[in-house]
Image 1: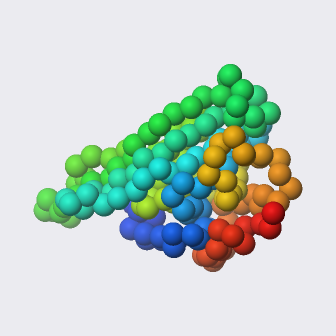
Image 2: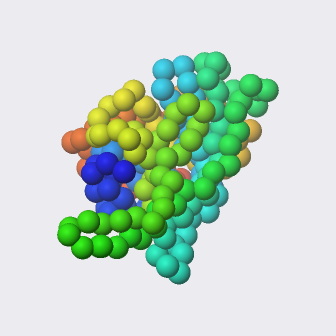
Length: 180
């Protein structure tokens, strides 16, 4: 994990149960809600199904991802790639000499060829754990949707965000993302 990812993991920006947080480096979405990802003509949908802290202090989350790379953003098509994944970051410890060690980690959400850094609890960054801070062409759009069959990545009500180092954290109630 690079220093940027390590620093982000320590920030622990956690939205409320019915809030989205829009930050400079990523977006936090409530459990069960779908976060859309766009990079060029590639589209992903990510939904966290669980997130918890183990008794030993390990941060964990389960997610589902749907990848559609043909530009249609149609997650019901046969060529859509579905994945269930586990994310985790152990609480490490100092071993002396200024060295900090993590026992194990899996911090990147996989959605087809797209990899995005996860930070506890349900935050998704605009980059992977192997990249530094910056704009890599990733856009994220938080949604109210919980069911993949309802997703329309071309819905005019969606607001797409990119990496913006000057953006301050903004907490938005899920009901206020758009009006039906």
